[in-house]
Length: 107
Image 1 (cartoon, one colour):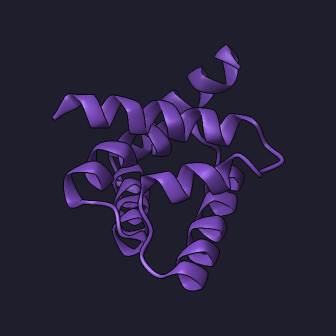
Image 2 (cartoon, helix red, strand yellow):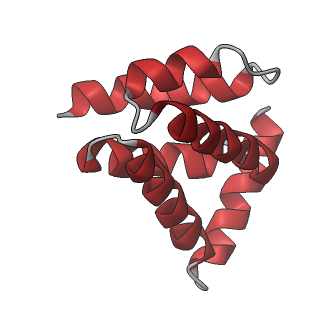
Image 3 (cartoon, one colour):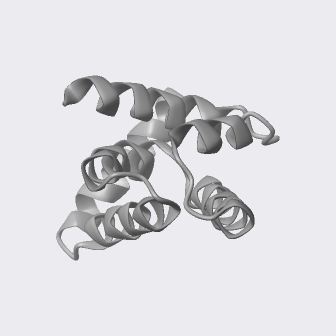
């Protein structure tokens, strides 16, 4: 886990010059906004999600957010966290939950 974090961090630092990390963060933020999260929460959560989740995990999260949003209309954090608990990858709900908690108390 620690090694993967270092690898991802290094990749983001290198990509920062070409703004790839910022683009990824922006796409995550936009997806959270489309789901119905407040702008400040979506912006706050986008950074840790972009840095702590792999591309594959982000795709899973994006698919879940899209599916839940289409079925239930704009959702809230409680709907998102409830659905995350059903995912096969236990790291995704942990990262999202940690980011949500941090961003809730950061305001």
